[in-house]
Length: 181
Image (cartoon, rainbow, N blue to C red; front, side, top):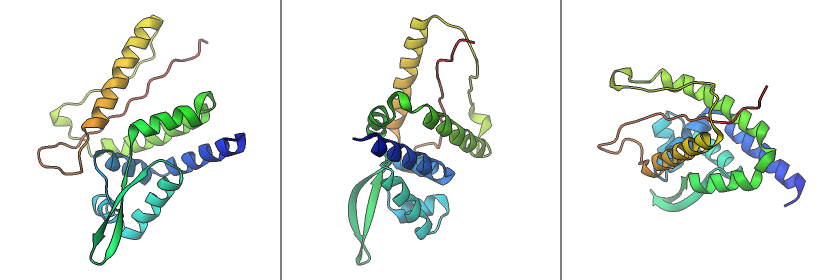
Protein backbone atom coordinates (compact mmCIF):
# COMPACT_ATOMS: atom_id res chain seq x y z
CA UNK A 1 0.00 0.00 0.00
CA UNK A 2 1.42 3.40 -0.94
CA UNK A 3 1.71 6.33 1.43
CA UNK A 4 -1.05 8.12 -0.53
CA UNK A 5 -3.42 5.15 -0.17
CA UNK A 6 -2.68 4.98 3.55
CA UNK A 7 -3.34 8.70 3.94
CA UNK A 8 -6.60 8.38 1.96
CA UNK A 9 -7.72 5.50 4.18
CA UNK A 10 -6.98 7.52 7.32
CA UNK A 11 -8.91 10.49 5.93
CA UNK A 12 -11.90 8.29 5.02
CA UNK A 13 -11.94 6.81 8.52
CA UNK A 14 -11.76 10.26 10.09
CA UNK A 15 -14.62 11.54 7.93
CA UNK A 16 -16.69 8.47 8.75
CA UNK A 17 -16.16 8.95 12.48
CA UNK A 18 -16.80 12.71 12.37
CA UNK A 19 -20.58 12.30 12.50
CA UNK A 20 -22.12 11.32 15.86
CA UNK A 21 -24.83 9.20 14.17
CA UNK A 22 -22.11 6.97 12.74
CA UNK A 23 -20.71 6.29 16.20
CA UNK A 24 -24.18 5.23 17.28
CA UNK A 25 -24.52 3.00 14.20
CA UNK A 26 -21.20 1.29 14.99
CA UNK A 27 -22.49 0.57 18.49
CA UNK A 28 -25.72 -0.92 17.11
CA UNK A 29 -23.86 -3.06 14.59
CA UNK A 30 -21.61 -4.53 17.29
CA UNK A 31 -24.43 -6.66 18.69
CA UNK A 32 -26.13 -7.75 15.48
CA UNK A 33 -26.10 -7.40 11.73
CA UNK A 34 -28.80 -4.91 10.76
CA UNK A 35 -30.36 -3.46 7.63
CA UNK A 36 -30.70 0.25 6.91
CA UNK A 37 -34.38 -0.04 7.86
CA UNK A 38 -33.42 -1.62 11.22
CA UNK A 39 -30.89 1.15 11.91
CA UNK A 40 -33.38 3.81 10.88
CA UNK A 41 -36.09 2.47 13.21
CA UNK A 42 -33.70 2.17 16.16
CA UNK A 43 -32.21 5.65 15.77
CA UNK A 44 -35.28 7.48 14.50
CA UNK A 45 -33.75 8.12 11.06
CA UNK A 46 -35.29 7.89 7.63
CA UNK A 47 -34.34 4.81 5.64
CA UNK A 48 -32.49 7.05 3.17
CA UNK A 49 -30.50 8.76 5.93
CA UNK A 50 -29.58 5.44 7.56
CA UNK A 51 -28.53 4.08 4.14
CA UNK A 52 -26.36 7.14 3.53
CA UNK A 53 -24.50 6.74 6.83
CA UNK A 54 -24.09 3.00 6.30
CA UNK A 55 -22.59 3.65 2.84
CA UNK A 56 -20.13 6.14 4.36
CA UNK A 57 -19.06 3.63 7.02
CA UNK A 58 -18.77 0.83 4.44
CA UNK A 59 -16.70 2.99 2.08
CA UNK A 60 -14.34 3.85 4.95
CA UNK A 61 -13.95 0.15 5.78
CA UNK A 62 -15.52 0.63 9.21
CA UNK A 63 -18.26 -2.00 8.69
CA UNK A 64 -18.71 -5.08 6.52
CA UNK A 65 -21.64 -6.41 4.57
CA UNK A 66 -23.01 -9.41 6.47
CA UNK A 67 -25.46 -10.85 3.99
CA UNK A 68 -28.69 -10.02 2.23
CA UNK A 69 -32.32 -10.89 2.75
CA UNK A 70 -35.43 -10.65 0.61
CA UNK A 71 -37.99 -8.20 1.98
CA UNK A 72 -41.24 -7.49 0.13
CA UNK A 73 -39.80 -8.30 -3.28
CA UNK A 74 -36.57 -6.37 -2.71
CA UNK A 75 -33.18 -7.20 -1.33
CA UNK A 76 -31.97 -5.64 1.92
CA UNK A 77 -28.29 -5.68 2.77
CA UNK A 78 -27.27 -6.43 6.33
CA UNK A 79 -24.21 -4.77 7.87
CA UNK A 80 -22.04 -5.60 10.86
CA UNK A 81 -19.26 -3.95 12.84
CA UNK A 82 -16.45 -6.41 13.56
CA UNK A 83 -14.43 -4.95 16.44
CA UNK A 84 -11.58 -7.46 16.07
CA UNK A 85 -11.22 -6.69 12.36
CA UNK A 86 -11.33 -2.98 13.20
CA UNK A 87 -8.51 -3.29 15.75
CA UNK A 88 -6.37 -5.20 13.24
CA UNK A 89 -7.10 -2.62 10.52
CA UNK A 90 -6.17 0.23 12.86
CA UNK A 91 -2.83 -1.41 13.66
CA UNK A 92 -2.15 -1.90 9.94
CA UNK A 93 -3.46 1.44 8.69
CA UNK A 94 -2.57 3.87 11.44
CA UNK A 95 0.36 2.29 13.26
CA UNK A 96 2.42 5.04 14.83
CA UNK A 97 1.04 7.56 12.34
CA UNK A 98 -2.45 7.52 13.84
CA UNK A 99 -1.98 10.03 16.65
CA UNK A 100 -4.08 12.75 15.01
CA UNK A 101 -6.70 10.16 14.15
CA UNK A 102 -6.85 8.95 17.75
CA UNK A 103 -7.18 12.50 19.09
CA UNK A 104 -9.98 13.23 16.62
CA UNK A 105 -11.73 9.99 17.58
CA UNK A 106 -11.45 10.82 21.29
CA UNK A 107 -13.05 14.23 20.62
CA UNK A 108 -15.92 12.61 18.70
CA UNK A 109 -16.46 10.08 21.49
CA UNK A 110 -16.47 12.87 24.09
CA UNK A 111 -19.36 14.50 22.23
CA UNK A 112 -21.17 11.17 22.05
CA UNK A 113 -20.64 10.67 25.80
CA UNK A 114 -22.43 13.96 26.44
CA UNK A 115 -25.45 12.66 24.50
CA UNK A 116 -25.40 9.31 26.30
CA UNK A 117 -25.26 10.80 29.79
CA UNK A 118 -28.52 12.60 29.06
CA UNK A 119 -30.11 9.14 28.77
CA UNK A 120 -28.34 7.60 31.78
CA UNK A 121 -30.25 5.74 34.47
CA UNK A 122 -28.24 6.93 37.46
CA UNK A 123 -30.33 4.98 39.99
CA UNK A 124 -28.89 1.58 39.00
CA UNK A 125 -25.28 2.51 39.55
CA UNK A 126 -22.64 4.04 37.38
CA UNK A 127 -18.91 4.26 37.67
CA UNK A 128 -16.31 6.57 36.27
CA UNK A 129 -12.63 6.99 36.79
CA UNK A 130 -10.79 10.04 35.60
CA UNK A 131 -7.25 10.45 36.81
CA UNK A 132 -3.81 11.52 35.70
CA UNK A 133 -1.57 9.17 37.66
CA UNK A 134 2.05 8.11 37.93
CA UNK A 135 2.38 4.31 38.11
CA UNK A 136 5.02 1.66 37.58
CA UNK A 137 5.25 0.82 33.83
CA UNK A 138 4.60 -2.88 34.44
CA UNK A 139 1.52 -2.12 36.56
CA UNK A 140 0.30 0.19 33.74
CA UNK A 141 0.71 -2.59 31.13
CA UNK A 142 -1.04 -5.19 33.30
CA UNK A 143 -4.03 -2.97 34.10
CA UNK A 144 -4.29 -1.71 30.51
CA UNK A 145 -4.27 -5.29 29.21
CA UNK A 146 -7.03 -6.34 31.66
CA UNK A 147 -9.17 -3.40 30.60
CA UNK A 148 -8.55 -4.15 26.91
CA UNK A 149 -9.73 -7.71 27.56
CA UNK A 150 -12.81 -6.47 29.45
CA UNK A 151 -13.60 -4.21 26.49
CA UNK A 152 -13.33 -7.16 24.09
CA UNK A 153 -15.58 -9.21 26.39
CA UNK A 154 -18.21 -6.44 26.28
CA UNK A 155 -18.07 -6.29 22.48
CA UNK A 156 -18.33 -10.09 22.25
CA UNK A 157 -21.35 -10.10 24.61
CA UNK A 158 -23.25 -7.43 22.64
CA UNK A 159 -26.65 -8.48 21.32
CA UNK A 160 -29.18 -6.96 18.96
CA UNK A 161 -30.90 -3.80 20.23
CA UNK A 162 -33.81 -4.49 22.58
CA UNK A 163 -33.11 -8.23 22.86
CA UNK A 164 -35.31 -9.52 25.72
CA UNK A 165 -33.37 -9.86 28.94
CA UNK A 166 -30.68 -7.33 27.98
CA UNK A 167 -30.00 -3.84 29.32
CA UNK A 168 -28.79 -0.88 27.31
CA UNK A 169 -25.39 0.29 28.54
CA UNK A 170 -22.73 2.83 27.70
CA UNK A 171 -19.05 2.02 28.03
CA UNK A 172 -16.35 4.52 27.17
CA UNK A 173 -12.75 3.67 27.87
CA UNK A 174 -9.85 5.95 26.99
CA UNK A 175 -6.42 5.10 28.32
CA UNK A 176 -3.08 6.32 27.12
CA UNK A 177 0.39 6.86 28.42
CA UNK A 178 1.25 10.55 28.64
CA UNK A 179 4.49 12.27 27.73
CA UNK A 180 6.66 13.31 30.65
CA UNK A 181 6.59 17.07 31.00
